[in-house]
Amino acid sequence: MRRLAALHALEILDTPAEERFDRITRLAARFFGVPIALISLVDRDRQWFKSRSGSLVQQTSREVSFCGHAILQSDVMVVADALADDRFADNPLVQSEPRLRFYAGHPIVAADGSAIGTLCLIDHKPRHFGAAQIKALRDMAALVERELQATAVSR
Image (cartoon, rainbow, N blue to C red):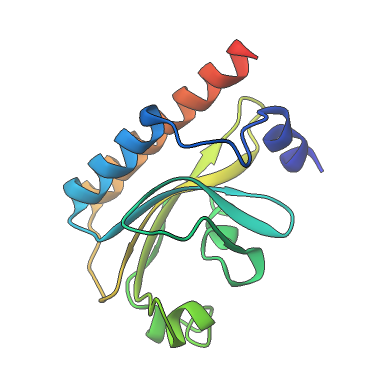
């Protein structure tokens, strides 16, 4: 699959934390007022978090990931209330800890156009996410893409 080849070509999976990515997730969490912001890279069977603000979890199974759905979108995917969304209401991440209710994720796209992950925001309560917030998340996701492209160039 082209998407997985693009992800693996970056040689970034399972690498240590990097301030250049952590700065973006901290900024996103503060700017949007959410407890969790993540840079998620979606592999075949898992989503692995290159950066995480507000979460100690390093990865989750792709089958329960919201980001696995978000990478199939061309723009921001918003789940205002996961309990009210048929795709996620029965998800174990919603039904039990960490009891996710809100999700907004923008696909992170590699140089070849493949969606390899997301910059995502998570809250434990439902939220409204308006047009101005969507634009801001789109801009922050572009910063992540730029950093990933710099990684590819330096390899």
